[in-house]
Length: 303
Length: 303
Image (tube, rainbow over all chains, first blue to last red; front, top):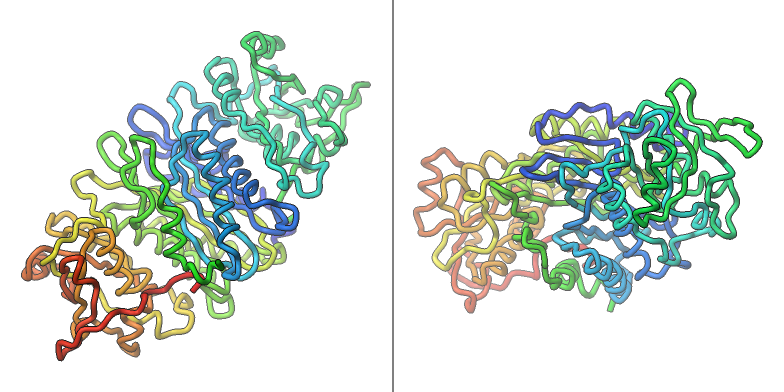
């Protein structure tokens, strides 16, 4: 079987089957970040790798934006667990003919964001790459035990909420060219500290994929109300549902007015659907009440 | 300036200039692993990335060996700090035409070694790569505060010791084809627990580079006695000095009989030189007492 048949999520399934032996491992593969038990708090660990011509094109990407984007993707994963980032390791693979100024620019982007979020760059690796530029960041973070928020506690009857609109990056060919997406860490902290949310994920693989992942982890189904999905200007509904690269938060709150109470606390968020029982599956519902199945959904590597 | 002029170590210097702000950051860039302060112990973090046609050739490399090799390189970094590995994140970038069996084989190699060293695989990323296979592993580990061993406490008069012979991997064109090098974690624990050693490093970039790095971190000089360097069978002295990829330990012990006391404790090790004052520099000394300067030294990316 070729990878293109199995797909990224099939591959992750194969890998995630491994058991964990260490008593400190609370969550391994399968959430936005791994969670390790430490005295007094949880340690969060996540990693994201971007490869030229897959995640970005150098023709349309400034190195300054690229560095910020890769770190931002990692920060978003830490935020989605309810935590904050602390330490990063940055690995850069570049062809040896690359001008040092470009590498400096890349690190300037990374450092700019690192300073803003009080992240220490504590290591990494600088290596030669035969052709494509490769950037890999591992980010550590922390969260108080009581404020950890995973994907797995959504319940039937919960409202599904989002913190922004969708489809904007997908409407462009290589959305990374401009670093302009928000990092929802303040919103994530507000959500988790409210103690109202049952599950949270960042929408890096698209809205539908995010809901599918919450449902899978929570053993639940969902209804996504198509007329309620906030579609970015210039994007189609299709792009909003499946585009990815938004880094908004998708989260669940019990009851129909859960969202209202969060809005009262100053959080900008929109209800886009509800969690239902697992056997009802994950479905899209249009304004006329017509129910359809989502496509396999979301940006998936190898497919 | 092109990267090929600056070189890997020049690049690391540029990056390492960043200050650290977090009170938990004990050591950032510049040792085998970063060290973070946690209640009761230190957390160690390291990362290593291997790219096809730079670090290995698929023609001469089995995926089973490749997976083990990348994880082993990381374990060696944790060992060189005196610690033991605990959790790993594995990122694999592959072309979408790759057969899934090969990926399974890669993970089988990684899992085999992970089980042996009681490492939990807790995350990672599976992504598409346009052409070359990319494998990146971030490894976490721990060490008791009293047993942390860095590169920076070597003193003039210390003996320089090594745990094995050098040049073997360099004598082959693509040494990764067979996974056969030892992981010196037991030896490292024995060395650090003896409380005799003042500095330690793993020799992944070659013997001379390892001594240079200890001297740089310790603000010292060194004499490497060429007739004492254990040269692997089939390798030249040149390969032993500069080849790299050995993953032996290079460490320093005060006084001339420090090595003997460790040998009495059952450690196989050889004295290859001594630490001298910084102003005397790092030099090679042949059997006739002739002193020469090392080449810039060790496997360096971009050069």
